[in-house]
Image (cartoon, rainbow, N blue to C red; front, side, top):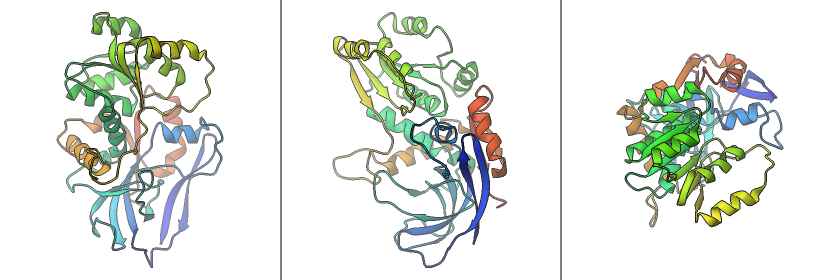
Length: 335
């Protein structure tokens, strides 16, 4: 069968290509999935589209936020033929998908029929945010600062707020602060954030500072903003080179008795295991309910839904028009 797919061929260069794939003789852990929609990750994918990560090479097929329906499957795939699923795979209209039983690897999960498939493409973003929040030590009334109000940052800030925290989000783009507030975030700031922290915390500093940018210079600012005995959560993935004097950072960790926690996604079990409350399946169920109940209105994050043939412009908009575009979703239904 024929499939269309997005391929990055160079810095800022992407194309929609097609190829034939074999959909017969599936292994027990394989499935053929017809994609409905897929979301561009404005973090991971942009780092690849514009070679922000060192040692990157082309060509490569990007993507991992997909919603579609199973056309055929092996016996070990839990979802049934015809059911809607969320799955990890590169952007493509038709996917021969292979399961992984590892924490890091391809996953497929049945999702409710009533969930909007466009909004379902954001489930991976929700899973990242939930993982970060669950890894921190949170108490009612904690003062939390989220540095970086991209898509995951906004979701993270809203989740902390739902747990009863006093949350403020920071981003140099006023547009992102406006989106966050339209989704229910009570406090955001695009300048003079040190003053805003002092005001919010009555001069004591934040209980938790969360970096969602992955920028080392922003991470270093987190150590300035937290109070003695506070927490710093690294939810963004550091990618670019940054030269600095680390002694001042280490000194703050030491003198302020800070807890620093890495929050790389998918380090928890996929399915429930004894001794672990968190698992990917449980977090996905929570994320689906939050989206379907409109407790978090994902539609306000999605800037536009486009034809995959416009992929080059989509990456350009997300990279260079950040004041206008947050999330872009590919519509594969006509391929």
